[in-house]
Length: 108
Image (tube, rainbow, N blue to C red; front, side, top):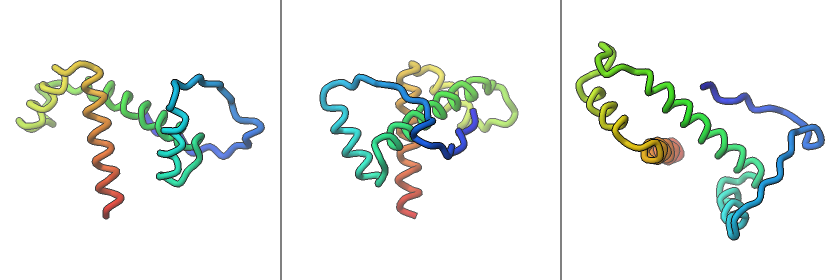
């Protein structure tokens, strides 16, 4: 799955969708958005994009065969263990790795 191109659009013509948030979530989103120096809308879009990319990466990763000559012994073992995780655990692990990569890039 390819990342979506940053669309330049007018807020008047953009698709709109009303979301009912659980109590306290609006404030949490506002705090995170403020920390990332972006609007709440941009924060929500960025997180949706990240989630969709991770899901696509998981689906593409499942296509790798354990007997693929492209994989080292360690990669085969990691892939085999990854596939044994539940989908929820796989998503959490990918999110953790992505978050760690973002922190490392921010420090560089």
